[in-house]
Structures are given as structure tokens and as C-alpha cells.
Figure 1 (tube, rainbow, N blue to C red):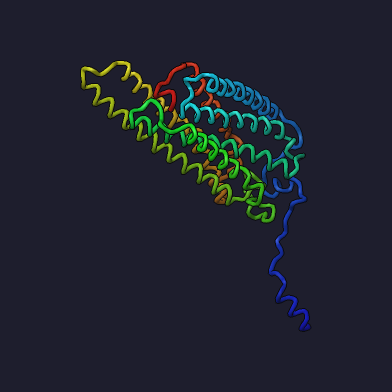
Figure 2 (cartoon, rainbow, N blue to C red):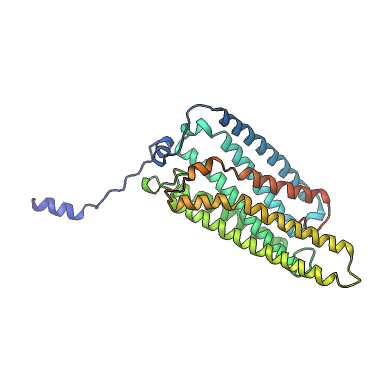
Amino acid sequence: MPASDAVGCAFRPAAMKQCFYNETVGFFYNNSRKELTTYWRTKDVLVVALGLTVSVIVLLTNLLVITAIIINRRFHYPIYYLLGNLAAADLFAGIAYMFLMFHTGPRTAELSLKTWFIRQSLLDTSLTASVVNLLAIAVERHQTVFTMQLHSKMSNQRVMILIFCIWVTALLLGLIPSYGWHCLCALEKCSSMAPLYSRSYLTFWAISNLVIFLIMVVVYTHIFIYVKRKMTRMSKHTSFHPRYKETMISLVKTVTIILSAFVICWTPGQVVLLLDGLGCKSCNVLAVEKNSKYTPTVVKLNTTDRRTLSQNGHFTVDSSI
């Protein structure tokens, strides 16, 4: 080998990283072996029709909740501001899901990489905003229940800062994949469920949600145990008011429903994402994904709970958890 060639080899990168920014969405779906249809099937039409219906319901009901909180001064307290922000997050989720319905099925193959990332970022941002907001509500409820207060002493300014931080966090986590945490330059790291996302991002995403979920379970379980003990102690006194007992029982029921809803709706989906992120070859995550539609269910549960709250027109411990 000539000396000049030897010198050139010494300074040449061992391997040039090849990026696929000009490839189609279909290229990445084929790489991940995820099904990508090119024609409308009956189930595709049904999914889109159901999805659009759920989206419209979510948009209308959450608009009612936000309007009720804005115009009714009895709702101008920290907990209701957080509930209003949760309604805003679900409203955003409805918009994101509607956008998904107009860009799914056979239309997925026609998407540009930019549009695909926008579609996923909208979903990720709305989901993160809802989850983090639910965590904030759980912490706020824990504080007020244990201090025997009707409303938190948190100032409106602090609540607004908290809401701002929630949306900044949601936007950052939603936009990270679009700005680098993807697999366009490392096909071997592409996930199966989200073919343009890096498996490491899915792992981070799933673990983050599971940790937040665990914190909420711990917080609400603590509330559950405290209320049960409080009710047992107070029931021994003759001055124990029956309405207070009813409120306590209603609180316990609400906590149980919330915990059950999260366990059923959130955990399986996050576990599947985690398995995909970890590269589990024998888990067949794509088969599980076809039968997993968690977002509409969770959004509907949140919406129904807050709609009941706004119709009551007064503060009750159970309705605000």
C-alpha cells in the first residue's frame, strides 16, 4: 500500500453514519416490519369513524368544563384551575386524536416524515400534559385532605407557574423525537410500534410514565388509608355527622375507581411500549398494539369525572380528586 493511502486511511472515519431523511414512511415501516396498508379496509373505516366521534365528544365536553370554570367564581380555586388545565390537556388530546384520524390507515403511507413526526408529537404532548397534570392534582389533593382544608392555600400565581411548567414539560417531551431522538440515522435502533422513533426513547417514555403512575398510586393509596382510619375513629363519636361519613365513603369509592382506571388503562400500554423499547423479540408487541386502544378510554373517563364535578356546582372532596 502506498504511504499516501496509508495516511489517508488513518484519518478516515471508521464508519460513515448514513441517514435516511429522504426516505418514505413506508421505508421505515418495512424496516420495523409493521403493517402499512395502501387501501381502506372495513376496520380502518370503523376505527376512523369511532375515533372522530370520540374526538368530537371530548372537544365539546371539555370546552363545557373550561367554560364553567372560567365563568363561575365558585370554581376560582387552585384545584379547579388544575382541573381546567386537565380539561385543556384533554381538549388538546381530542385535537391530536382528530389529526391522527385524518392521517391514519392508508393515508399513513402518503405522509412525509415531517407530518408523521407532527402526528406523533401532538399525541405525545397531549398525553404528557394529562399525566403530569393528574400528578399535580394528586399532590394537591393529598395536601388538602391531610390538612383538612377545603381548598389549597397555593396562590393563583403559583398555580399559573405550575400550569406553565406542565405545558413546557409536555412540549419538550413531545418534540424531543422530532429534533434528534429518532432512528433516521440508525435503522437498527428503530422501534416496532413507532417505526421512526428510537427504542431508547420509548424506554425513557414508558419508564417515565410508569414512575409517575406509581407515585400517583402511592399518593392515592395514602389518602385512601388516611380517610378510612379517620372515618373509623370519628364514627365512634356521637357527634359524627352522617353527611361527613357519606363524603368519606364517596371519597374512598372515587379513589378506588381512579386507581382501577389507571391500572386497567395505563399500565398495559406502557408495559408494551417498554418491551418494545427494550427490544423484546419474543413479545410480539405489534400483535398486542392492534388490540390496544387506551387513549379514547382514558380521555373519556377524565372528561366524565370533571363533567360531574361542574354540574354539582359546589366543592366536595370526592369530586375534586
